Length: 357
Ligand code: FNR
Image (cartoon, rainbow, N blue to C red):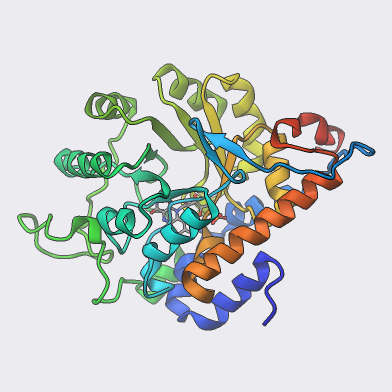
């Protein structure tokens, strides 16, 4: 099979993963309107290319939180990489280290934060955090990732409860017994005892989470805090007022609230509200270099990919994730050149045909 674009990896993963695993990765909430619109929304946007600008050299590098990365695409946190490839998150970590971009390791990793750090000692990593009813658990994991050199805490705020994913219910999706949410191995023993569907006890996420918990997290750690899951200018403003360092515009890949907007459609109002006071990133539906270009033109500092990284893993582990990133890199560079941009700083809103939106 010749892998030319990300859709080829999606097709491969669909054919080679078990139905329950494929369904889990692919799932959106309810009717999947938001999941699907995340992709379609990019296709509604048209570009205004500039010509005759000597694009013989194209520099795709950028920075996030002051750290240089090779191009503005990182890996979003997604759960259970061992379901897609036996080495799981170790492969993802090595691939992102090789490509020199940012990997946000999920709380629900099937390798521990220690194993991930050891697999790619020079990789640039952030850690994605949920807040638990038992704050001690959150505190312990924050201490661990700080000590391991993870460079930021990404607090996911769009999961007070898990969205309704019909196929997962139908399949009674569970982690197979040989896989564990390694970050919490042995930590729940004093509690209810029953290991729930994800290998962790039921009701561990705290639906009472609010802005005061952001302050609590700040009191706990000096790492930069990035809020993942903001979709409105009002919440972006609150995030800035609470002194966080970054925002990820995200609807969890359409897996939480169905009927919410596509992330690329929310980006402009959030960028306008924030006015450069913190970095704004986004995820959801990025499948081509062109999508990346549009997101950067609309003000994202960097974008993150969720499902495509999993398809890369399913295809060939570390090598597959590298291929995914390489294809996106090459497509992005070509789109930049064809629209007359020589470096990332030259990508701005003039590139977007607003009259069509
Ligand atoms: C996710 N996402 C997610 N987010 C998070 O903060 N913690 C997590 O553990 C997970 N787990 C997870 C599993 C799977 C299978 C998917 C598809 C998604 C959401 C993820 O970080 C991101 O927001 C979306 O995946 C981005 O959309 P695309 O790129 O998948 O379209």
